[in-house]
Image 1: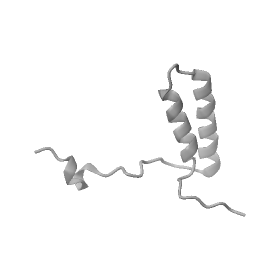
Image 2: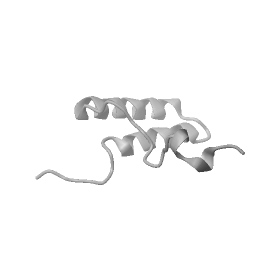
Image 3: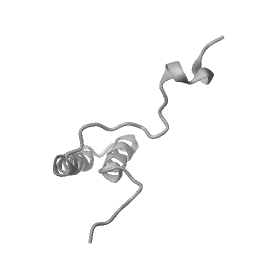
Length: 67
């Protein structure tokens, strides 16, 4: 049975890696492991590109324009 989710492919792996690099003290070995896990996921799922869900183009968002 195929599992469906609202999350993009490899989103959890990407978040785990990002959160790892923000931790103090920095654990390079742990983050390197998480990088490899993310790489394996994107290769297996054939992910081509990541983007932020709430990211808007500056030209189309008038609240980003300076007066």
